Amino acid sequence: FSGYDCDSDPCQNGGMCQISDGGGYRCDCPEGTMGTNCEIDSLNECDSNPCRHPDAICQDKLGDYACYCPPKHAGKNCEMYDRNASGGLGVAIVARKDTNTYYAKDLELQRKQCLKNNCSSKRGNQRCDEECNTYACDFDGNDCSLGINPWVNCTASIKCWEVFMDGNCDKECNNPQCLFDGRDCEKSLQPCNPVYDAYCQKHYANGHCDYGCNNAEC
Image 1 (spheres, rainbow, N blue to C red):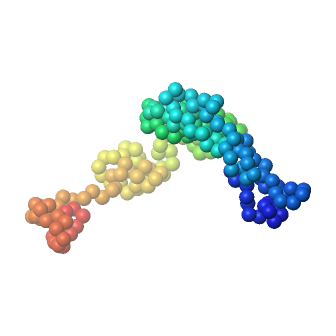
Image 2: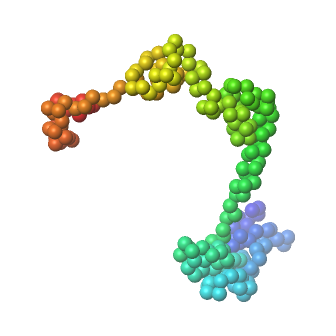
Image 3: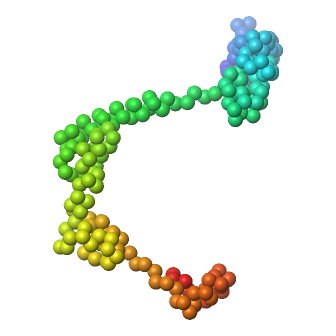
């Protein structure tokens, strides 16, 4: 605002204060209000029956209205059926994002990336090209699936696929390229000493440290 008379912000309900040519001020009032300071409700918005449900109650407000909806109805005008709605003051429903449009645009962007990475020429080259391993790029022609020999990068001197998950730890195969020997080298816990087993179960978490039970097995 500008001018002395507008400094006190006299206009109410969203009115805009303007300096009058002859001195003083005037308020440009929003629709539905009037008066020197826009303090008067000049329009009953409920007269147009905005609430869509016959059992809804309309309350006139300054430049606006409110609908109080019965149970199972929602929305600014109680226009939406919602079996989980408890009723009460109607609130405008925010439109949800069109997910189908979003995914279509995302797929289009991915396909452009496929062209940029020249994925069509890499498809079926027996190598997994990670940048092409997407739906839009036809999953690199299945080059990244286990249909191809999963031990193709294993350089061990023994045939790790023949000892895979046989219960014995073959250290030469215990690496990512040889699929960690099927986890055969992971240490398994020995059973708790039978001398302590029953005792440890009975005294578990009793607030005292029993050295015979203070191990991973027990």
